[in-house]
Length: 212
Image (spheres, rainbow, N blue to C red):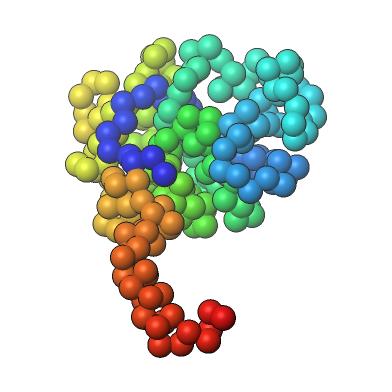
């Protein structure tokens, strides 16, 4: 998992509440358990005008010109502004996989669905919860100013607007440490690799018949 320390990136406003995980990555793309390759199908039913299927060449598909992430001013966005209850619905981990593969490393909104919120941290995406009025102001500024960029400093726990205003946010200390170091569940386990090897060696010596 890629570490998250400071992100200075283009923001895009997804002005919809209750965006569920089937909208983030539709069910037909869940056959793969790889973490990569889902970016082209992020928000598939909203980004494209045809029916998406696994294995399609998305470059040749007709795009919906009205969808925010298809607009030229938001190309390359790494920060997505969201509304209430983003990531609701099924618990598919493919949703943060698709966001991260597309290039979205940070979500800012007033609330997130619990399982989706947890899955984001495990996959290198930082979800930031802010009061609704602060999110409203970010939406207003982002829509008014082309090329609107935010600086997200995880260590300092601050979102810094282009006008210099700093907005503090809360984050669980353990999740923060994992993101700063790029530790997913496998990475956390490997921190104890020496102890695991020692345990396996001791077990083999004491109970060799388990391994015959």
